[in-house]
Length: 534
Ligand code: MSP
Image (cartoon, rainbow, N blue to C red; front, side, top):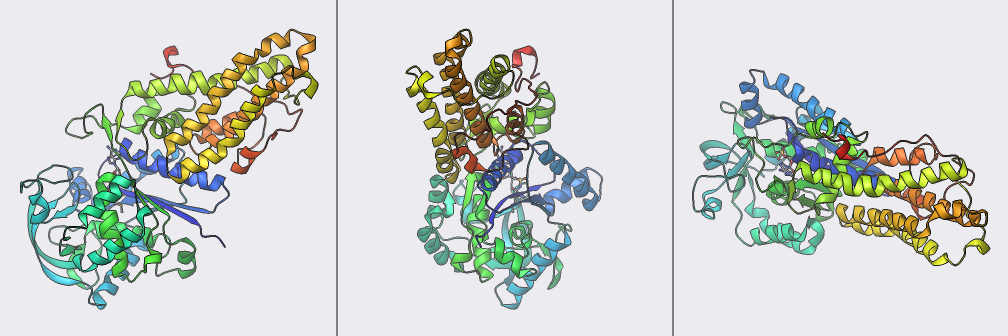
């Protein structure tokens, strides 16, 4: 039996409400999960929340709440956002759940029992917002100043006794593994970044505990009641605990290794260095390493970094429920924008104008216009029933245009497959919209309204209308991973019943039963000038 396609998102910190960055990773992962399902594959899409550590503890204190109560409330904001955005995860793991805690403790015990951990005193720097340790050597690269190389915020000097996982001991193995598996980290720039990091000696050890007297909110370390687990060691293990590592062997075997870990570029080192080393230390072989770590870029706000202190955090709820409130498919407009605006892997500039630009140009003028024009002609000229293709001898020499359109439509799923196998979401959407543009041009060139007036042009009109209906059907199928609600709405307007379920149907022509009546129709994307978006 084919292995289930297993993909993950990072576990989001619940110290504050979700923002555009969180929704970006989530929407991208959802798009891939939906795409794989549409291809007929079994998929396990895991997401969740990172609920331990100093940063959460401090946020709970600031809110005047006990940490557990605080995280229980915060997690709901993430879950509700995923519902709003149509996220189709198969599992949602919280690091405070017993099923996770048990696995983390079992891993700690195992490493301890195998003498794979060291006890020592750490004397160095710590970044609480990133929950990350930095050695003096690593800081030297930034001029030795005590600010975090990742987020540039001030570091805290820490000197504390704890348990350590050796890193350097695994460095040669990791370097060799990377060389033998160039697709392990993508995009290529991120692969190069880690490959060059591994040319320098790694820090000797990674501290994987925190003293309980300073950080109370963490998973207790089974062999030391003075310690809790370092939040990154805890959180990374979710990728093992959710599929049942050490608990349900059969389930685990069907899921592991992860096919894709989606992450942002800021947490590359944790995923591309610490994580494989943890797995290696736990005795997992090279074949059992995750297959791909994909680090996407960051959304900036115009030219600025998004940050609480600048007060420019983009709240997805505000975009979808307020800014786009006149849109019936606001969540899909937002998904489309995220996936189309920036090549996945690069940084992007967010602005409300950029969303409106996409909404008006691509969605209203191209896609909405195509669906509206084609279906209203079927309504007007054929009483709302999709006609059969006209008979050959009536094609009046327009064969090439028909064939070109059909050919591009039938090539679409192949193009999509190529783009999606590289996680090039923007390219995939580009191909779908190229077909949409082509179909709009076809309408202009074919002038169906002229045939409608002429009794001898009726067969030709049938061919044009049917070709358009078939293209719209294929667009509806291929849009499903990107804009699931829009895809379903188009499908229903075509009178297809249910929702698109199989990508393979995009390679069929025709795929509509002749004589099929259209479903109820409505405008998909009201233009923003009409006050629809604000
Ligand atoms: N809890 C850790 C992950 C543990 S995974 C075992 C964490 N959480 S986070 O909430 O801070 O970040 C989650 C994700 O959001 C990261 O992938 C990060 O890159 C992403 N983003 C945070 N800000 C972002 C932008 N401005 N733009 C795009 N994504 C960004 O790190």
